[in-house]
Amino acid sequence: MSTTTIYNFAPGPAVLPKEVLQQAAAEMLDWHGSGMSVMEMSHRGPEFTSIITTALADFRELLAVPDNYKVLFLQGGGLGENAIVPMNLMGRKPQPATADFVHTGSWTAKSIKEAQKYGKVNIAASGEATGYTTVPARDSWKLTPDAAYVHLCTNETIDGIEYQFTPDVAQETGGAPIVADMSSHILSRVIDVSKYGVIFGGAQKNIGPAGLTLVIVRDDLLGHALPCCPSAFNWTIVAENDSMYNTPPTYAIYIAGLVFQWIKRQGGVAALEQKNIAKAALLYDYLDSTDFYANRVEKSSRSRMNVPFFLKNESLNAEFLAQAKASGLLQLKGHKSVGGMRASIYNAMPIEGVQALISFMQAFASKHA
Ligand code: PMP
Image (tube, rainbow, N blue to C red):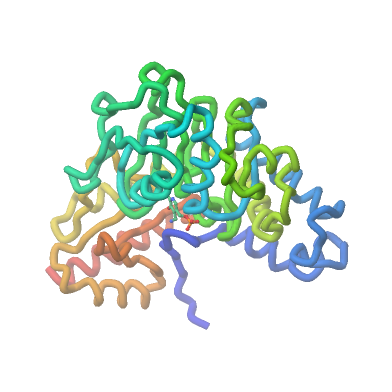
């Protein structure tokens, strides 16, 4: 086996804390003397009940989720929520209702397309004119009075754009709730949950394996599902059944629970946020210091989680990726819609990984200068 240290920069499914994987491996065949793997347990038995109850409590504690919010464990991923959100919220207003979207890039584009099947969509602001390199300024948003909700993607994983502010939309919309797709930065920074109506995200970046979807929903937003909404995706029914209306993704929830405990051992979300700020600053400072590479995102909108960058000489892309891989730096290829490179530096990426990437980039640049 190679002795090269591996750093995995994948956008998701993504790197998980090694300690978590080691614990899961040790418990794989026999969870806590139960004689069963977590994958083999009834989701209603006492063993799994203790796993999901602890995971939920730890998650609530990590994000300080207020008591008037439910935390739901679902399936369907971020893209599933693009339909599940309008099916649960469009019914808040007389039909056809309107949802406002702030279009910041690849993932909001998909959300907009899906929501149009369930109601009217108003693009309140769009980053298209700038090539999705910035979050449109709050004072440019043209919101709908009486909107059913306002949808934001607070971290655009592909474009590398992140909200560095929490908008307030209540006044112009008659109190519409903000729905935030936090798939790719949840638990990476401290947030005030009370500023949002709904927060959702697929697990496969900062939480655990793909297959688990988290939804945080304010109590007063339940009870409005459209008749077309499948029961398994009706937040009210899922909440009434403590996320056990249908069989939840049990193994993914178990791993997520181990990740939540790992985050607590790191000092919680606030401590991880400081580390994430330091990691991102290191990489952006290097990118800004050289002409060999470039990041095109407006500084005030740069993501701490996903850092897309381009080689000035794009004919070197394949060589860059091959040599990075040989040096233990994996999955740096940018999304096909954007090209170039992308380093995803989620919670589980240690600062040493970012340092190793920068050293490699420096060496590659001097070789090709
Ligand atoms: N939203 C965001 C911000 C994402 O990053 C992703 C996945 N990369 C999705 C939605 C889609 O998630 P899924 O593949 O779980 O449906």
